[in-house]
Image (cartoon, rainbow over all chains, first blue to last red; front, top):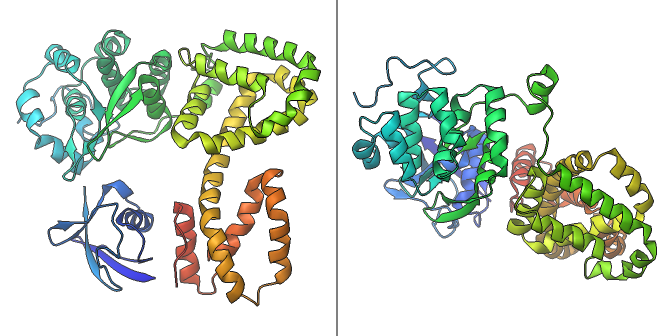
Length: 73
Length: 380
C-alpha cells in the first residue's frame, strides 16, 4: 500500500491510499471519490508527462509519498 | 464577439444559456477550429445545413479533450437559441438522424420537463444506428433510442451535465402527462396469451426441466427469440435487457437467466397469477431489481475469482479465525452457488475479505471506498 499526494494549482491537496498495482484509472476514481469531481474530468500529470489510464502505478514508478499534479480536462 | 450569446436570448435556468456547458469544455469549444471556421455567424437556417453534415455524436475525446462537431453545434444552438418550433422540427424530421439527435439534445438542455418527455419519448421507436465517438477517440456503435434513453435517465451525456428534470411519475401524478403507453403493448398481450396456452401443456415442460442447466427451455427460448425479433419495435425494458445481454457478455447473463428460469418454473402456478397483474409492471420491478442484482453480482463474481486465491493464503495465516466458518462456507459453496441467490452469500464474504472491518478506521474507510468502486482492497 502506498500513499500518493495529489495537488492542484488552486490549493486542493488530496492524499490517497492505493496499491502499487492499481492503474492510473483506478487512482482517478479514488481521487474523484475524495474530491467530488468526475473521474473522467481529472488529469494526472508530472510536469509535462500526462499519465495514461491503463498503466499501473508500479510501472510509472510512483512510490510512497510521491507528489503528483492534478489538472482538469 | 463571436462567443457572446445573442442579446435577445432568454436566460435558461437563471443563467446565460452557454453556461449550461461547463467552463473547461466551453473554452475547449471556443478554441476549436470547427467552431471558429464553420460555426461563425450561423443562423437557424444555415445551422440546419451544418447539422445535416454531421456523421457522429460524442463529447470530448483524445488526450487534449478535443470537442466533436456535434458539441460545437449544440453550443451554437445555445448561443443563437432557435425557437421551439424549429427544435421540434429538428426532432420530427425523419430523414437525418443526427439532426434529430441534435434537436433532442438541445431540447433536453433547454426545454421544460413535460415537453422533454412528450417529444423525446416517441423517439424511442427510432432504432437506427448512430456513430458515437468515445473519449479515447475510437468510434462506438449505438442507436437513436439508446441515446434518448441516456438523455432521459442519466444526468450526464457527451461531456455536458444535463439539467435535472422531474421524474416521470411525478408529472403523471400531477396530471401533466399521461401514463406511458408502450408501443409494444399489443405485442405483450399476444405473448401473454401465447404463454398461457403453453402453460396448459405442463407435461412438455417437466420433460425439459433437465435441459435447464445447459440449454434454454422452449418457452424461454421462444421468448428470447421474440425478444430478439422485436428488436425493431422496442420497449425501453427489452432494449435494456437485450443491450445488457449483448454488452455484458452472454455467460453471466445466461447463468442469471437460468436462475430466473428455474425459479420461475418452480413458481409456475403462481406465474400465471402474476401475469394477470400486468406484464409490464413485473418487468419494471424486475428490471430495477435486476440492475441492482447485476451490479452486485458482477462485483461479487469479479471478487470471487481473487477471493478463491487469497482465501487459500489466508487460511494458513488466519488461524485465529473460527474454523467453523470456513468449513461451513466450503461445504455450502458448491451447493449454494447453484441453488440459492448468490447475493446474500457474496455480501457476507465482502465483509470478511474486503478489509472493510480492518481495525484501523482509515484503512477500513479506504477499503470501503474501494469496494464501492469495484477495486480490490488495499494490500498492507
